[in-house]
Image (spheres, rainbow over the protein chains, first blue to last red):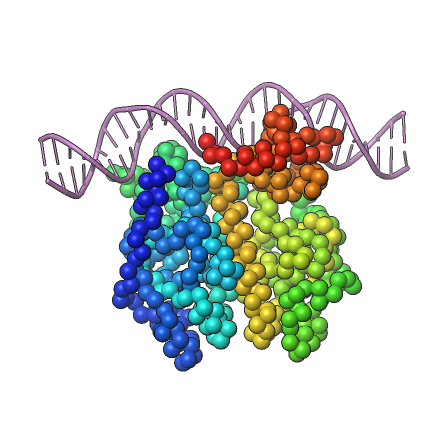
Amino acid sequence: MRAELLDWRFPPPPKPMESPALESLEVFRRLSGPGLQLLHAGVQRLHLPRHTQALYKGQAISGAYFVLSGRLRVFSLSPEGSEASLYFIDPGETCIFALNSLFNDLSYPAWVEAESDTTLALVPGPLFRRLFQQEPGIQDMTVRALSTLVFRLMRELEDVHAYKLEQRLANLLLLRANTQGEIAMTQEQIAHHLGSTREVIARLLRGMVAARLLQTRRGRIQLLDRNGLSRLLGQPAG
Amino acid sequence: MRAELLDWRFPPPPKPMESPALESLEVFRRLSGPGLQLLHAGVQRLHLPRHTQALYKGQAISGAYFVLSGRLRVFSLSPEGSEASLYFIDPGETCIFALNSLFNDLSYPAWVEAESDTTLALVPGPLFRRLFQQEPGIQDMTVRALSTLVFRLMRELEDVHAYKLEQRLANLLLLRANTQGEIAMTQEQIAHHLGSTREVIARLLRGMVAARLLQTRRGRIQLLDRNGLSRLLGQPAG
DNA sequence: GCCCTTCTGTAACAAAAGCTACGGAAGGCC
DNA sequence: GGCCTTCCGTAGCTTTTGTTACAGAAGGGC
């Protein structure tokens, strides 16, 4: 089981590919002329198909990663193989995740995979450090991105302590539902996000169906009562 | 109960006081002449007696905080009043905690109190931002500090998911024991650190005593077998 | 000593979450 | 259709954690 996991988690390195322009990210549009030249000379592009590995725990970080399109998922993997998402990295929103490793010369402390097809710009470490020194825009972005991450992590940690699984589930459903109130995730995925297991999620969903908060037709989850779900969140956990 | 909590959590604002020199922190020693002048003109000193409130959740952040001596504890407080430590800020190690709020113009997302008598240097927001622009040393410190924090939080979040309470307790005991193997914390404090309750901690400690991993004489915890405790950590959680 | 507060010890019970073990539905592929 | 894979539904049991409710030990202040 463990071995299988590792097998598909170490795919051959992905190949470069042409795709969205660097200038689609605001950070890069703010660069000075020389900075932009440096960037274009040194940047690499990567394309990761859905569900492939971007980083593994302990990997040395070779540069700063910017998500141009798609979505990355950062998660932890316990010794027994159970996962829990730590946070996500969306496209419009910048990179950040390997930055800390980059500045501290530490290895990366979690796993990262592409949740959907994802295009990355990889700015090699030395180049990034140089840009950081010269370009106020990069400084600003870096600090802002790290700050945001700190916020998310603090928030998540708080939630784990303060809320029960059912509440965290309700929260996730509310966050991930589209405008029609549908959620496009398997129970397994949900379980991984919350650091739990499929059966437990199924049980909780059943309870919510019984309470007329949602429907599950043919495995698709369909919210019925967003207010009801929100109410779950506010209640004291006892 | 909730009301009482709030009462002692909002003490009158602490008073300025003379204490350790700013130059005891390496960041400040690296400042340029003008930068140092700016700093001295704008910095404030605060002294927090043990167990007083430094920041409350939602507070607007007025500046960057540097711990000169003592120790701060950052924790979350659930609606029902249960606590869980998020991380600590030690003296030699720089400030950081309000930095994210400072750069993002967000309010602070947790509570902070002095774990022991603590001296702080408060650099007002505008001054800090200015120093950040001018001084490479400050830039460096800022990114490094934020990175470190991100690491700690990721680590903690991972631990919460991957390890049982007993393992996290063993870990905490190993970390906080002095060279004689004694731990100077009450069961209540331990429970708060781990986001649990006193009774549960007592039960787990009892188990460890039975397993000859430690002694509890007159309430003092005394490690007997560090290896045994470490072994607890490595074991699969099942 | 006596009172008060803080901390610890313990037991019995309750709730939450996880694990095991099925069976069954849906869809892709041959 | 038949086969295979992936996902969902459900039940029952176990483990872990939390809660309630007391009682007792230690120390400080008077």
